[in-house]
Image (cartoon, rainbow over all chains, first blue to last red):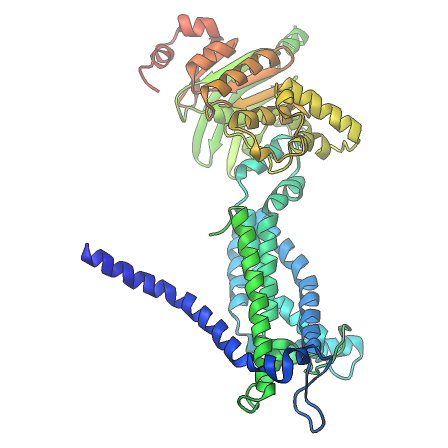
Amino acid sequence: MRTDNFMRILLVATASISVLIVALIFLFLGKEAMPFAFEPGIGKLFDSGWVPVSFQEERFGIYPLVAGSSLVTVLAMLISIPLSVVGAIYISEVAQPMEREILKPFIEILASIPSVVLGFFGLLVLAPLVKDVFGLNSGLNALTASLLLALMALPTIITISEDALASVPQSFKQASLALGASELQTIFKVTVPAALPGIMAAIMLGIGRVIGETMAVLMVSGNSAIISFFPLDPIRTMTATIAAEMGEVPFGSHHYQALFWIGLILLFVTFLLNAFSRIILKKYGMAQ
Amino acid sequence: MVKMQESNTAIQAMDVSFFYGPNQALFNISLDVAPKRVTALIGPSGCGKSTFLRCLNRMNDIIPKTRLTGKVLINGQDIYDAKENIVDLRKQVGMVFQKSNPFPKSIFDNVAYGPRIHKLHDRKRLAEIVEKSLRRAALWDEVKDRLGENAMGLSGGQQQRLCIARALAVDPQILLMDEPASALDPKSTTHIEDLIGELRQDYTIVIVTHNMQQAARVSDTTAFFYEGRLIELGRTKRIFTKPKEKQTEDYITGRFG
């Protein structure tokens, strides 16, 4: 009995560590970011320019960075969602068992490639390609970053969508086939609609992955903090800004605090996306 | 002579054997099903009755590595003929499964699913078919005010009647039922059995059941399967009162099964 209690406490403590860490990260980010709200004031974040180091006036507007993050995320999703959802449908519903055995490990490998390595691939292969195709001076822009991010979101969306499709009861498919529906009609009128909540959650998690990605976008997005929604402009994302500037910022300065605000906002957005996808999965009984 | 035979049999199984990979599940089954009658397939678990039922609308086709020899004629057509259209076959031969399996869609969309995939999109016609099918399945009065609600919210018995309505909506001649009441409570079971009694006037029904009282109550003809073989076939009354085969007698008197 005493051992039971002891083990119980030990396990609860272990399990609580990750919760504690997340809470501490929130707290720590908040603590470092907070002073900015009083001096120079939170309104400074809503400026239209990000010029954190300047002899005239330092500007900490996060709009260009939010715009950059939004642009690459939307573009990446436009590319990634159709590819990965159709891919998941193929793997789950159409592929022969042999094909599945081959495809799935490759998708898992794609998920485990370090983002720096993908960044290299982006720099050496994608950027020159984009540059040549569109006749630009430089291939480092939002489109290149989006292509790379789309690649990184693929395994997340495929794997989770495929789980959702595979968990659609066989009985639905049988009912549809028995009514004279073809395989294709069954897939698109029964299986995919039934798996839609899971596919939505997969997309949410894919968006989370894309927004949070740092290294690859830092390498290929062009790093210019301008407000632009044109895919062939160089842009800069929130994550890349933190990564690029945190190393050189004077400790405790307004610039330093502003970077923490960006981190806080990022964490909040990904937190929301995760929570949202969990709610969807839970509501439809798909959570593992 | 040939013509007469055709009109007197809705389904004709001729020397049907069926294999799951290397395992033979059915051995040379020959069996005629009369039109607008209820034929019950009974037998212990694993005797092949469900497998045989699924041969009649080629549902076994979706299981990989299966093989059928022999012929199954429906209205005189060999349904395993390479030229035969499986979509047309399944329109003609509806199926109700053991576990009710409505789609996670509205009640209306469930019933309209079949007609819609067969390219009927006229709203008025669809509404007519849905109402007619639900009435035939004795469900209309219970759901007519909430056709837009999700079918998953219905009770088990209602869901099963909805599945029957869904099968009827494509206007089949034959209805295959695979233990349609085995997962239901006694009241819902009575409902389904009454319904089968009504449907026999217009449809040829083949029902697999574990429940011998049910077979005795609802069917005109009974076929007893054992270990993949058709042991005995005859009028239900006769099978249950004067079985010819020892195995049939042992089974219906509850000595095994």
